[in-house]
Length: 484
Picture 1 (cartoon, one colour):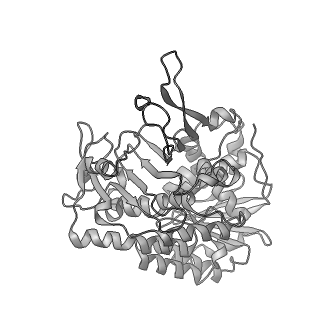
Picture 2 (cartoon, helix red, strand yellow):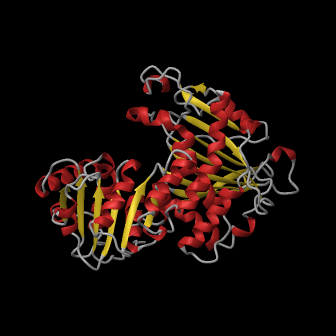
Picture 3 (cartoon, helix red, strand yellow):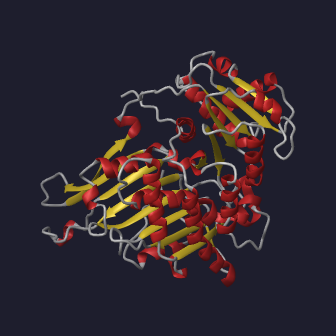
């Protein structure tokens, strides 16, 4: 199966922070791969803008080096493609808080086409950039701005950030990007649920025992120590990435597959979340091992109360999910790098088999990384003449195997940037959605700070603190193994 490439009309894309780490590692390689795939029509222009003094020739060389380092072995790119890609690149040295470079940037804009401005900079500059885009006549009804997380660090800062953007752009022009939503398997959540009669009738508390969402990393905080110690797993992962996965799993079917219809249903999930009880959450910090320092050494703060691991039990107060627990966990320096959602169905109401046949249940597992795909565990008879012995076996749909080698799933940034150009906001967070997530998160963090809760140490290469295992054991359940 070969994925179908639908070209987009010529557009102008400006990357503010065009010499930064995110641009080098993600944005520019994603644009290059879409160029290789033939999705960009002739006339498209990509313009880097940053404080660094550089001309077009130097920037093109800078981008070529980034592509060689971060693009990897992309078979869709023919020899000489980098040189052709360089021809659509230009650069402007620009002062985000002053007037330097803005007239030059405005002169590069083409009238009558989509203009996208990627704010690959700190949130403190968002308002300044939005203001000057208007002052220099670069903002019209076809203008879109893309902003990266963090969307604030609490409800007050998120509201202030939203106001600074809303002063200059309508909500339908603002694209708050969360790369998790661009993953192929995340989008397949909606296809699985709403495109298959097999699952949707069972997708409720009557048939689902519980749902687990796991995002595990093997790396530590590394060079992000100062930033991470101000955020922690709750702000860095739960409030955005895991909350979005939870919403897609738990939301009601939208009336139509339309950006606002989908986001309306996600918002309802966040607003239906029960307050998090203190004994329903476990926080941890990874310890040093023989080769690597621990969290406290990484952040250079021996008194840090910030968590590098979090596990929690959530409830949703609505008719579909009343009584069904959702277990979320995320952490660094764990046993394996993996992201998955497991929908664990209830056991059959009456077991007709003998007791030694064991306990069995169906589990639908959506693997987000590293090996994207879907498993459905079903119960069958174990082969052999030894009587009716039951075993669980997976029906496995690994995308790379099921769809063939030509079904090269685009990187999340590739898909999301092209959605910006098309004007499709389905996979982007809306302002009220961001604020609702912070409104739920803030009281939890405030409670930790008031009580002075200290994270529990856990071993590098483990599954996290033992207390996280107990969080499920006391409910008669257990976490799925963390494995790649």
